[in-house]
Amino acid sequence: MLPPTPSTDDSDAAMHLSNPRVLVVVEKGAHVNIIEDFPASPENQNDSYWSNAAFEAVIGQGAKLTHSYIQTQSFRAAHIKWTSIRQEASSTYELTEVSTGGKLGRHNLHIQQLGPDTVTELSTLHLSVADQTQDLHSTLVLDHPRGYSRQLHKCIVTHSQGQAVFDGNIKVNRYAQQTDAGQLTRTLLLEPRATVNVKPNLQIVADDVKCSHGAAISDLEESQLLYFQARGIDIETARRVLVFAFGSEVIDKFPYSSSRDRVRSQIKNLLDPSSN
Image (tube, rainbow, N blue to C red; front, side):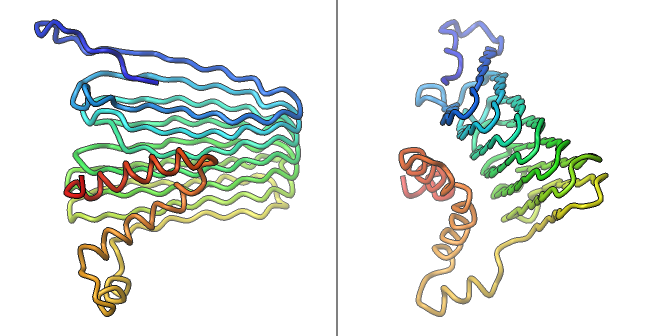
């Protein structure tokens, strides 16, 4: 999905807006792979526009939806993304997300499990290399027995004016007995004034569950850097390797090698512009 085409009239100062909407219905027992891609084309890398996208899916009984979402828009753009998922019994939803673009990048994610034995797996990586804000607000509602969910959120902020936000909510309601739900957010802050706001939130009403959540925020560990230096690798190279490895756990979850290779190349270029 490409950003709106900018006007050729220089006197037109209006911001362009696009509102793409995707609706997916996965029938009972089906398996669907979907890739959502929001790139910035070379001619509008520095354009200002607003992308206001919506993705809705209903996943039938025993069906599976594998959802890849890649956002690499202009650093002057606003990218607001809405994702709404409804899962029937014994269905599976897998989301892999990498977001590196936008002056403001925000993903509003809402998932509801509507039957027992339902699986939800969410893996996201946000990268802020300029005065960007990368923001994820997610809600997962489990209402039925034997639900399973895993949420892994990673963020890297390499700019002193960069920001990251994570507001993750998992609700395990009264009838969601024998639920297994896990949530983890980890952030690398690589500049002294870089900021992150994280709020992992696990609300449990059921009494027979196995649930966990956690958050970690740090710079790279000195012991890891010393390990590389002891083997003759300079500190800048060591830092690049460790930062890239931090995000690889999410990148490796893309189901297609073409997506993995393109995202790896994009992130390497952002982390080390001199390599271009």
